[in-house]
Length: 199
Ligand code: GLN
Image (cartoon, rainbow, N blue to C red; front, side):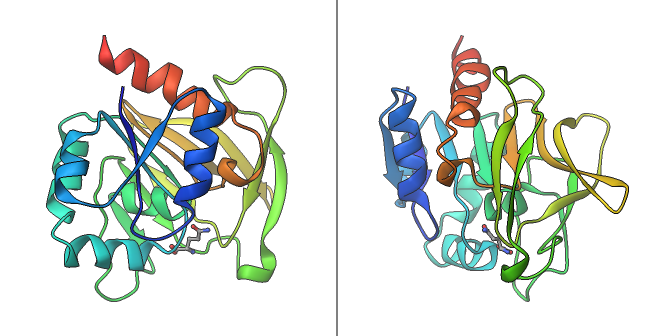
């Protein structure tokens, strides 16, 4: 199974290391032919506006959007979640998303860079105790359609905000497991989504 990590911008190297820790050799991909050939794709954290603009500049936007809508397993962390959303609240000008998840996301929902934080989250489908989650100018899911499964949430002022979601083969977290050293989220993607999609 070829798992690509979109390497236009952001922390794609950390995702490659996380995959390595799960026993999977990922491929950094940024060319049309490379993205056409992967079986699954990870969209890293970084800056969603920049990733969306670079994808358009390099003629990759439609390819990625079409591969996702044809069922390719995909995982987006943080900026990657924004890029998988149906709608973005507060988008930058010229910012578009690939879609795949029937969610509306709020960018920078938890505040500015200085409001970044870490937390331990109960994660549906992941065993062995709470998952360590690092939030850096993270989005949250503001609303979602009926097919979206909520896997983890964060409480802010008595309100629960989804921060990990899945819809079929499309999976996203608003936090960065690739930098926490907790590789169970990548393992979940590989075992529960990629491996099952191949059968
Ligand atoms: N705030 C960033 C954005 O809008 C995401 C931050 C991140 O990926 N850590 O794209």
